[in-house]
Amino acid sequence: MEYSYLTDPGKVRNHNEDSVTIVKNKGDDILLAVADGMGGHKGGEIASSIAITHIGKRFMDTSSVGTKEDAINFLKEIVSEANMLLYKYTEDNPDSTGMGTTLVMALLTKDFLLYGNIGDSSGYAIKNKKLHKITNDHTLVNLLVKSGELSLEEAKNHPRKNVLMRALGANITVEMDVFDVEKDIEGIFLCSDGLTNMLDDEQIELVLDSNLSADDKMQKLINKANNRGGTDNISVAYLKKEDNE
Image (cartoon, rainbow, N blue to C red; front, top):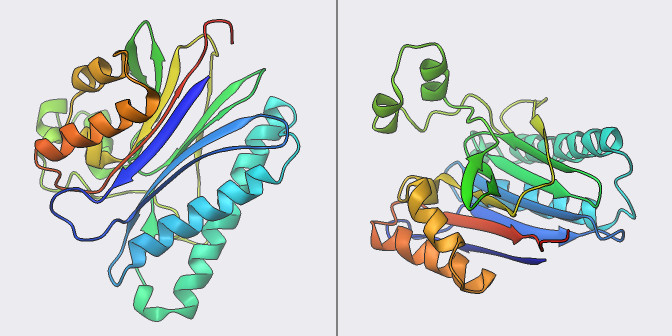
């Protein structure tokens, strides 16, 4: 198994509101997570950092996530805790009102694979060298696409494409979508929309399918996104499974 993660401010913004991590717990389960923060006065940086730090620490401190049902409950619990930390921070720091963060996670154990998301950061499974998007974006335009009011092509360039319908820290409670995914895949890939707004699936697949190391693949994706404009912060997390895993 090989894995890597990387974040970059991009070419336009002078600060990075993304946070990303890959951590193992005491039972060798592995968690990948990407958060894309939002809010002025460094609010986005703080929100994504609080979420990723809390979730990563809670996960590393566990000896096992237990059964699949236990793991789903655990993921929802630590995300709810992170949400309350953000909500309380905003209450204690009124100038940070409006801050929040997206979150996408993937949890791989020897028995199962789970994805979870809030917002519009994306989680993919890699199978037959192709990206298969697992998560659903919680955005206004995605809602309009599902209702038939917008086409996929119209959604790509819609002026309100970044309006989120769900985010961590926005309300006192939060609902995370959880997806149970078959383990017979070649890899896991998570990213913030700073990557997917610059590169399409085929361009990402070419890099992930190359013979580069995991670290070099992540750097190459960020370089490509920056070469195409780098209009947002860019975060990526990647795990390549061995054939016998």
